[in-house]
Image 1 (cartoon, rainbow, N blue to C red):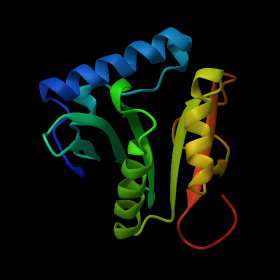
Image 2 (cartoon, rainbow, N blue to C red):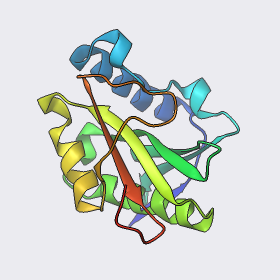
Image 3 (tube, rainbow, N blue to C red):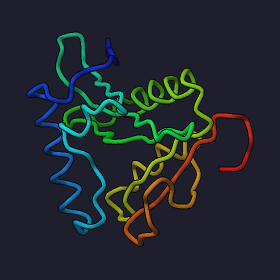
Image 4 (cartoon, rainbow, N blue to C red):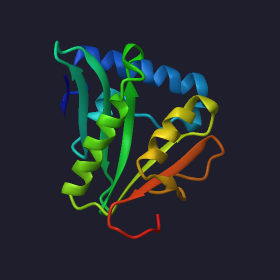
Length: 159
C-alpha cells in the first residue's frame, strides 16, 4: 500500500530526496534555469507539500502545490526516489495535487520543467494527465531550457 499525505519538507529523509532533486537540476540545466525550491522554501505558507510512502513508512516521492494568488497553482518539486521509479508514484502524487487544486477552486495548474532529454519522462507524465504547452506564467520568462505546461481545471479547452 502507498499512502500520499501532507508532510514536512524538513524531515531528514525528505530533505535528502530534495537535495538529490536539486543536484540533478543543477547537473542538467544552467543555474539560471533551475527553478526548483529547497526544503525551506517548500515549507512556505503558500505551498502545500505531500510525500508518498510505503506501508513501512519508506519515502517514495514528493510533490508540492504553490498558490500563485491568481486562482491558479503551480506544481513544484515533483520527485520520485530512484528505488521507487516505474511504480506509478509520480502519477499518485500528481493526482493528489490536482485534487487539491480542484478543491481550492483553481482554474488552472501550471508547471515549469526542463527542455533537456533528462526531463522527457516528466513531460510525458504531465501530458498523460492533461497538461499542454503554455506560455511562461507568474514571474517566469521565456527560456530555451524551460518547458511551460498547464492543465485547465475549469472545463475550457484553452490553456
